[in-house]
Amino acid sequence: MSHAVAVRLDSKGRLTVPREVCEELGLEPGEWFLLEREGSALRFARAGNPLDALAEQARREFEAGQTRSLRELTGGQEMGGDGG
Image 1: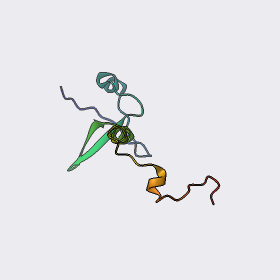
Image 2: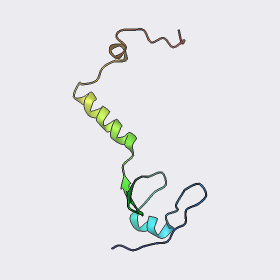
Image 3: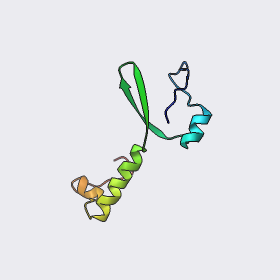
Image 4: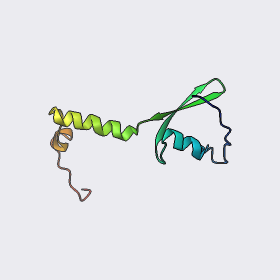
């Protein structure tokens, strides 16, 4: 079911999603959303955290044996912790 809700843009460019809408959709603070512009309209869609997607990709590469060590990435150069 679709319905329109009026919200106001604050001085920092933020929109507040009404509590009732958050509860209906199960939205939580800190969630990520995609913003799509359609002419003068804006469409928001729930999106996954992009860092979660990167972590999942890294996990798959690790499990497939496709990862490399820091030594391999730096061509065998030492990675000293003293900045030197």
